[in-house]
Length: 233
Image 1 (cartoon, rainbow, N blue to C red):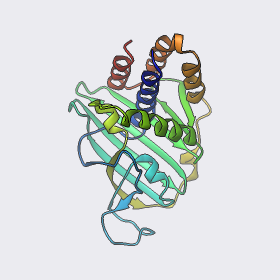
Image 2 (tube, rainbow, N blue to C red):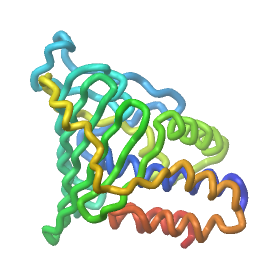
Image 3 (cartoon, rainbow, N blue to C red):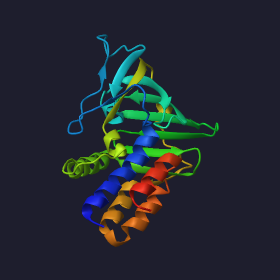
């Protein structure tokens, strides 16, 4: 397996674990951003950003974190197949972020996933497991930047890759932060995703098996299937 495919697999795994747990990849009220440049989140009105009420704020997860505001934001929609409804509730206070996502499929089965960031680390878990993942934000950005360079050097129609830079339109209000919202649960065991990725890169011979095992950690069924498919599991 060549390095290009390794990088692609890492990006897909990272995207599945982080983005689907933090920002649902849904097809309503979304905007495609420039894949070569991350633009800051922007409001759709001219009101003072220090006092936001029912304002549409457009941005990616990282964009929202960089606003350095005190916001509560909501977002609701369906996945690309129209079979799963996502309800997202985000809390922002400076560089701290919490994201609660409730996913309900067409059989009324639900999954709740959570993400907390302290400005340095992402912590991701769900109500379906006592095990979660964590990763440094700087390491995640570096991996995505390096891999995007490889992707830009080759033509691709992969939908997941096109979604990496998508921005979403949130409905936001200011709030008085409850700092307990940003506490990481003590009853969840968090696996360092960067350590897993380092092992994948160092052990190319066992990449496929390790990658498939990592894909199986994904809680969302659709994201897991797509990850396994892209790695050829």
